[in-house]
Amino acid sequence: MKYDKRLTLLVPFSAILLGAQWGFGILHGYRGIVAAVVSSLAAEWAVSSVLLGHRRNLMSAYMSGVSVAMMVRTPLLWPYVLCALVSILSKYVLRVNGRHIFNPSNLGICALLFLAPYAVAPFMVQWGNSIFPMLIIWTAGAYAVWRADRVHVTVAYVVSFVAFAYVRSLIGTASFVSEVAPLTGPMYQLYALFMITDPKTTVTSKKWAVVVTVLVAFVEMLLRLNQVIYAPFYALFLVTPIPLLIESWRKAPARARRSETPAAAPALSGG
Image 1 (cartoon, helix red, strand yellow):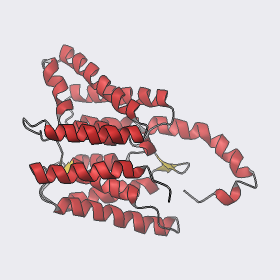
Image 2 (cartoon, one colour):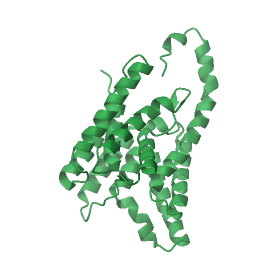
Image 3 (cartoon, helix red, strand yellow):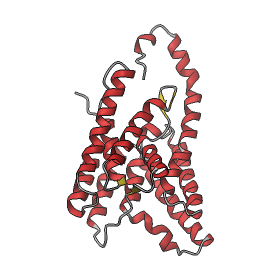
Image 4 (cartoon, one colour):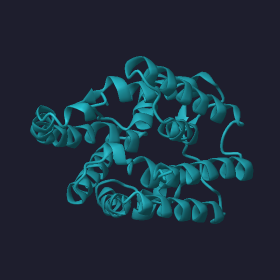
């Protein structure tokens, strides 16, 4: 059986989430993890069965559920369920030429933060003085992005964040150290390693993927200067659909030509 590269992300995702909860109690128990993952799997199974006529591989849904469980912090259960459902449904509803244009879990998180800020918050706690969890995240994450061929995206984001942190320190009243400090927190590490590098919602070209990543960091800087608390999530939501749409429209003529050939017709699967 052919190895599925998504396993490279799945294993670090699970290990980091469960290890951080066991060692540091970062979440409000395991109920949120179960609620997010089960909701994601159930939604993927049901929607793909109805709309596509067959059940899709549930590995992607599992990763979306774990992403939600990682990033959402709340003592309630319904936000995990709602965020997971919005994330999965967005892949089927917000599509152009057979491709979803929003990072699913980021879209779900943005929807929750915008509509129910009284009930949820993103995962923004610190590890305290322990460097061990940080080493786990960066080791597992670095391996994952290397296998997914997205190292350039993570590097571009980290370098851009540091550069724009310096710009923010010049414009505002905070010091450079204060502005760059969030990058040492677990939320930003998970964001840089796992969320912004999603292969399905990054452009194909490495050069343009770097350009888009720098633009995400730039928009985040503007939002942070305007005191937008959840700037990284909103920046990713605002920026990434545009280059994906441009890439999709540029490739549309080639897809149309392939679909016109007799040999290509049986290969169509409806997404």
